[in-house]
Amino acid sequence: MATKARENHREDVAGRANVEDTPELLAYYDELERLEAGALWTVANKIEPWQPKSSSVPVLWRYEDLRAHVLRSVELVSPEKAGRRVIYLNNPGRRDHAAAVGWLYSGLQVMHPGEVASAHAHSASALRFIMEGEGAYTIVDGHKMTLGANDFVLTPNGTWHEHGVSSDGTPCIWQDGLDIPLVNTLEANFYVVHPDLQQSVGYPVDDMTHTWGSPGLRPAGAEWSKGYSPLLKYEWGPTYEALQRYGKATDGSPYDGVLMNYVNPVTGGPVMQTIGASMQMLRPGESTRAHRHTGSFIYQVAKGSGYSIIDGKRFDWKERDIFCVPSWAWHEHVNASASEDACLFTFNDLPVMQALGLYREEAFGDNGGRQPLVS
Image (cartoon, rainbow, N blue to C red; front, side, top):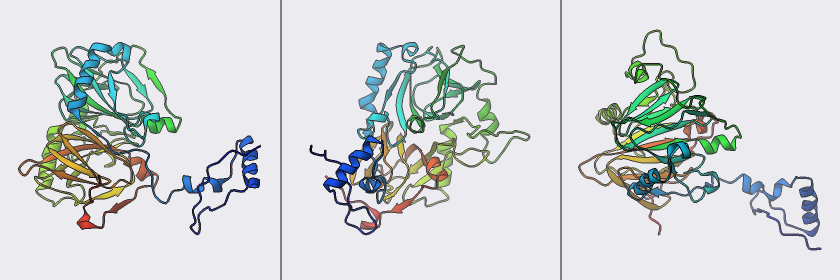
């Protein structure tokens, strides 16, 4: 009986597996398979690559293409039936995991005035970035936060949270970001619906912003020991002002322009244990140099227009568009305007990379730091 063909990732390089198949070895591999085992040297070069090989591909999701479909979902399903009325972003290389890039999930959620999604909690960490509309709010463990365009809000893992739009508001759309694929891969995800479906508001509205949102100041006697930021909402106005002020004092990064990280005001570290976030400003006409790093990034254009070159391919973007940069992909950004700045919001898995000692970065050394375009 013929022995079936088997994968054998040989490399004729010293120090790498390079075992040639023989009839005897192929029969041996069959015997190992029957014992739910295998020979490492047949797959070692595959599972230990020379450098990261992301299965994700760069993608640009145009808001003008998606918006009508997001709004149409309101006619098709109710929040009660859907749980959350979301159109998720599906990377062609990560469809088995419903991931936008790497181990990060993202989607666009829509709610109409007067609608409230049921309160729930899960092991995955989550964030929301408001794209359009008025009257949106989020409640996290009894803390209610009012939300406007470009506001950034946390719903950390294990917290009760729900979203809604006030009856006097307008249709609202926001971007969701979660680490669902990561938590599922770790086989650690739990999900629970609040026993009352809605939670009570136990504090003054926007109390966490009033308590923790003053730069350089910490309320006397305030204690916080949880692994995520107590500043559950990061408002657009102060964020943009901070970027402008910082831009007057720095030349910025040659790779990211004027970039500021959203941080936990207690620790100075990332806002959540598995997800980091930042906002960067590209000044008029600014063109960054290319670099790459471990860690997956999802960008949303908060302001302006321009383009990014990712692994040699150009992606033109404008306000509200979303694009992703896979781990270890070369990328650079350009502000297309000669008179207006551009701002990019991003969330990423850098806290995981850094906590595990896996972060690595490299500059593009040729062509003055700019990538050649590929067809």
